[in-house]
Image (cartoon, rainbow, N blue to C red):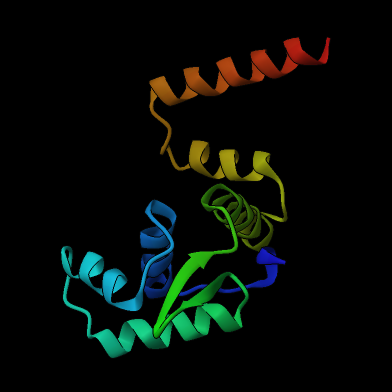
Length: 127
């Protein structure tokens, strides 16, 4: 489900607030975001409505308040977005991604060692 959903950077800001703490009212979400940058309360409400329509956020009514909460875990979202990126730009192949960075000298010696260590761990778990 989440793999086919596009979430804007601003919508992701709202999601980050909800992943950190939920359920929250639109006012509480606005206050949290405004600690970092200005955002009008109506903008937050619009973003919440979009996220509800995309089925990544839901809400429950408590009296006259709407309490919003995420339907998708943060880890699930970022995993799916990573897969989507890999599919979109590298044909789903991790090796193509690593080759790109290696060929453009974007990997430090430390990063190369980390990749080697990961490969060794993967090989050992296959045995």
